[in-house]
Image (cartoon, rainbow, N blue to C red; front, side):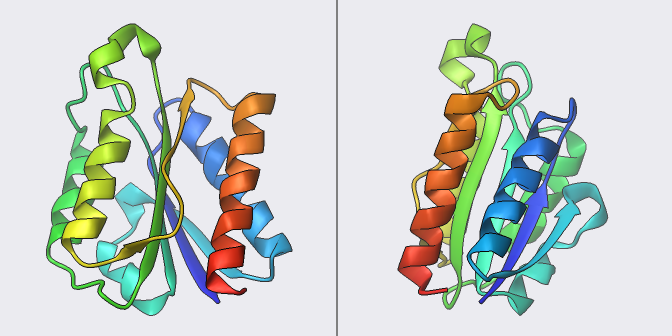
Length: 148
């Protein structure tokens, strides 16, 4: 089973999340490729079984350029034969917009036909023990559902 993790990270929190998930999926015998959104084309998802996007939500939810570009590319794809998961970080100070971009990507993956394998993992700022456990649990669910 091949997984592609693409992440966007302004502070390093989401890069850390992507790294934790990558290690988990490798432990479940996935073949994993991880890259930053600004250096990745969304069409790279066409070569994998599991598409994962890890993103931050900045301020009041407006996507930064690198995230918006990737989102627009994703909208052009047909991912009906793919599975997906999304996760990311946010700041509870912006309660109405907490992790809004994570849910924007969840909707887009569904719109382009991908099948969700686990509910979004959202964390406050950097990964702590509780959020690492949530990432681990999501990876386990991905592995169980995809029989990796």
